[in-house]
Image (cartoon, rainbow, N blue to C red; front, side, top):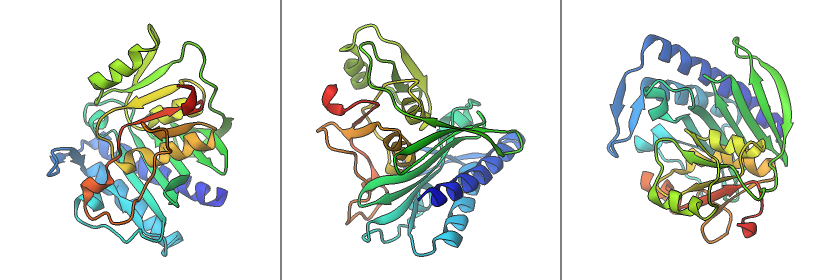
Length: 265
């Protein structure tokens, strides 16, 4: 598993380099049928990731955001597959912000077991597998210059919350209100999972639309760091239910990610 994570890191760095090159020269944006934006950076990064995964693990199917939007959905009934979001936080990317990420995850028996979250514009990444998670510092030449072991912390009496920058809802505000006056970090993309995994934040409630490729890599990192991502009913968020046939089938339900047991909420 750890060798798979190392390869994920290399692939993510390659994709991130391409994303930044496209951003520097100016990315063109168009819109998918669901009205969500997509850029040439999304498409180029996904091509890099899919090609590399196929070279290393040709027998493992890969579910990728833009491929699914184009109707390319592999058979995942075997229970082991990759989930890829080549550019999570496209709206942040388009708006000139830096909190967008490359996400690659392995799903086994409906749970994410290996994942990499890489924020190329911030020179930081998070990786996790086999109950070990790390924060990565990336040099300007796209080399990992530091690797720090991280663990999610037990939720303190006054937790720090993460909330979506672009998709915050009334339900999220109502949920957080139960904690009173707490600090809330407004962050885009799957970086919210990384903040929980390193103990810089404690809870991330998400009410509203997300897709499996949005959360799988960050979820894998958080689980490896000792945290949890659970549906509202308290059960672990699950991935790749058999019988899916179109993009909307890959939608997550509402969930709460935390560095402590969901039972403690």
